[in-house]
Length: 411
Image (cartoon, rainbow, N blue to C red):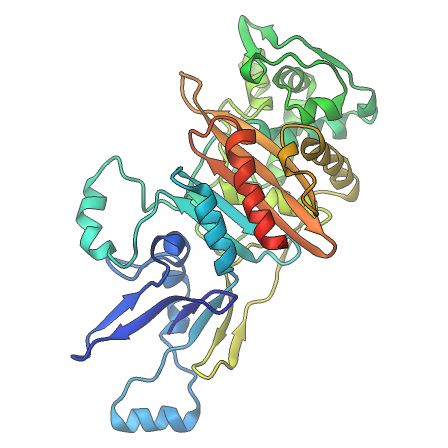
């Protein structure tokens, strides 16, 4: 059977030559390579997870019997995905030549609307390229970064830090901090990005400006046991509730590791690692009043006549955050796009809530760019996570990608 996008585009089909030889064909090539997958040297992506359905046939009985009598193959059922072809293409093009990932999902259903990973591969030639790919130890083209890639979250983790601080401090509105551009503890110095000096700030301004010195100081005030428990409740250190193949995000911190470790962890560095889909799920839950819907990518199964023979319905995982939590963090995330590091997303005809991040990944302090958040216009809502590897700041690299996706969706 075929694999289709939600807007009716063929993502995978089987073509037969005059000699009866069958070949799996992917019209969009690299653009859906990780999400749709391949059927050679094993199976991957939707080709693997939905293979059972495509090998079955719910053709009408008379046609089924006629094919059986004449020895012809019955047409396999078609998998219709939640992926939107136009949105996937926009996300793919917006990421450009950069390595990284984009995950887009509907907060109130869990449907994955786009899932892009780069570097990528052409599933039409993967059999020919296979030996070169697997023998190249530096190649990671088969890794689905969107769901299995783990990277430091950088300042997007301040969503977690801010939530825990507000939970522990009912008077968080009285928070004040004078940013001088750096802060030192245990002979370790934290700098604000590019040496920025933010001056006097409240909590909202510290979040909007992504002030490292303010949030590393906030980290020192937190109850480490409560922070660990909160991170676990936000799905760190466990399998994510989805049928997709994902990696476990990692968070570890103890009070005995010293102030430097606490400060770096509070701003998304240290040993913390996350996947883009995990961050998209957190944004999705914030948008959906704290309720997380399990992400899924196969929407329904059709027979050759287009009759639905099975539908995969939305499933709620549960409530990650209470109403008070979501209202508090939304206010901070709105400030980011109103006047903060994500302000390039303001004034577009829809509301955007988010957090940028610049995640250092080596001793040279090179960084990946992140944007995590959601957008809404009336009843239409989407959540997104973007990582641009070696992109520098999230403001300069990831925010433009998110803007392209939002514009496409709300056009």
